[in-house]
Length: 262
Length: 190
Image (cartoon, rainbow over all chains, first blue to last red; front, side, top):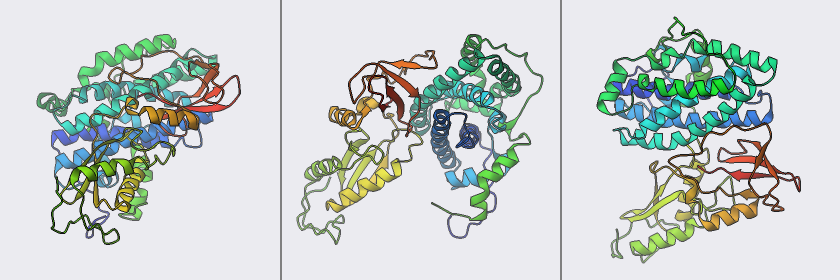
């Protein structure tokens, strides 16, 4: 860390372009952190490797997006400060990605939901008015495609598998479904992004996401739960009770040893 | 572009005296030749040039600028590659080296050279098939055992299966030959 700085939390700008990028970057960052927790614990070795490989891709994407958010913010915050030195309310990830991993069914279902969303997002962001964001997206979309294919294979295999695997997958879908409306809630940040050409309104991706995911759920013989009344608000900084714990893990080293590097 | 002027050149390292600075074009050509010897740290038979991650080499007033493009967003080798490139060019006496990362256009396995593909195969890694990078691969349903169309790099049998969608690095998948029983890796097309 630069001399003179300490481990005090940083505050981020409320500029809508910065907020839009933080939603994306934080969603990748926190999902990467969750997938990393599977290292050494996945049910089979191949999936241990797969989950951590996907975590690595997501972490790379998060680093690039957070770096860009810091540049647009012009307060001199780099990727590390943004990743490690914010308070909980300044993280703008979707609530879904901060939920504990649960069982393997929930993990692969969440990966499928997120890869489907991120693939649609990256595809449109490739044409962003911000050329750096466009370049990041052009790379990331290829990775998201592969993640989606892999996760969709598992959703079908487990959903249309044994009685036990089908039960677990259906339970996972019920839990996950509570957090889906948040993906597509429209607000001023999205409006700004759409009108400035920075990126799509997430709400505009809803129909494509639903069509893609329900096609896979049909194939997996999963029943779509009813539309929930509950609304989570992670991307506006109001998080679940799990967020503080994952941040404690994520931030511990930088808070304890400010500026520590490999 | 610099020329062979008589003014002291800033890229002249003390350890590598170079009394007659080479013209820019010649330095670029030498740099490309040096880059042929810088190997990928994770697949140490193919050079960074064979992999297609060196997008450009430009001679400038104070040395060389090398433009690299990352293979995967999270590829942990990229920092080692950057260091290896700087070291190799520095040791060749080609002056101060700056590396610039360029994300767009995104790297595709289509940029791996023929030579690179041959070396991968000899090393036991099946090279990537051509890919339509803008459209990717269509969704398909994989049964638990995935028969593949890849030929085994050891015995050339086409009776092979995919064991794992991900391998020892993000860019590879793991396969097995059903004829000779040997495992092998496949460089995934992206």
